Image 1 (cartoon, rainbow, N blue to C red):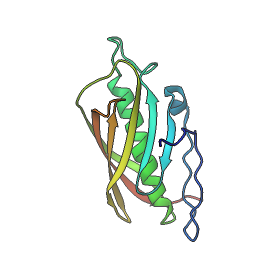
Image 2: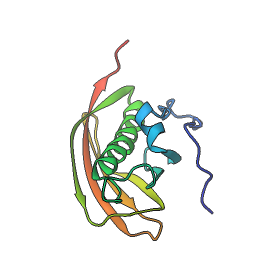
Image 3: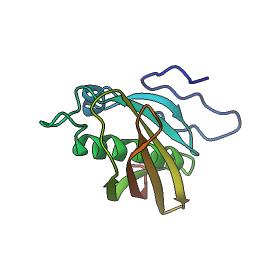
Image 4: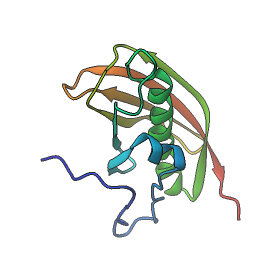
Length: 147
């Protein structure tokens, strides 16, 4: 059963530090991003292809990078929050495998490395049929939170 999409809400786990809560930014809202799941182990979101297409009618590669970077960064900040830190992106790369003209894409970030200084996440973007559209890798630097 697929969880219902929601904007941004995270329930604190008992006996754990308070995890950072995803808050959609202006671009995320304009792109129609919805959060399905958020934890240290995985962040899952969806985004409609409609409204995020380039002039040839295909999902815009820049839209894939923007949403992939957002989801990967959210995953890093959730991990950082368990250490009392925050995260900033230092590197992102992507490979486009295929495109889409319609439907809903799913964006899933999972950790490759969760350190105390750096995190690296793989972000997969798939279409309604589960086919891989894009693979991103994002590295974030963990920093002390500013007051």
